[in-house]
Length: 172
Image 1 (tube, one colour):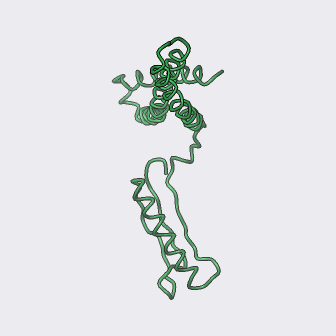
Image 2 (spheres, rainbow, N blue to C red):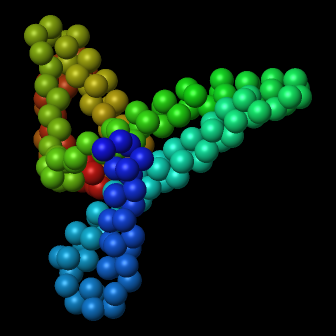
Image 3 (cartoon, one colour):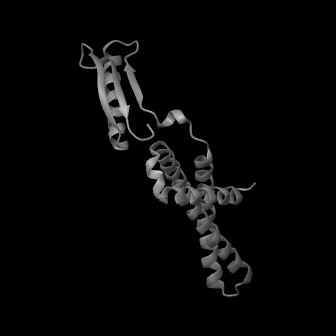
């Protein structure tokens, strides 16, 4: 089964999930609604990549056809330039879709506890651990995840010996 066939099969499931979400009786079954909504969100990301892939593949075929059939030199040069631009783009989309097709681990959607500990190295290790914790906190804020400081032990030189934070959010 090639990539296009696999994407077509997934598109059928996407439409099926979309139709199921539109049914009013689904509101009564909360767990099923949440599960279908999560599946829809995951499939929607894949379908957006599929649309970009199909559009790029179509433009690539048009450019190849122009190169084969067109007699006008200027049109052939434009098609050659578009071909050079679209081929790497199609390769990148193929890799993106292949990564999206990797099944998700159910543990990925759960919250996490992050621990940072200073290793051997004394005050320098504590300073580095403090910088590392601040980096992680900025990353969490950038992703839109919430966090709660569970515990922290400060070092002598202003760094930290250890810190634990609870991370909450979507697909933590």
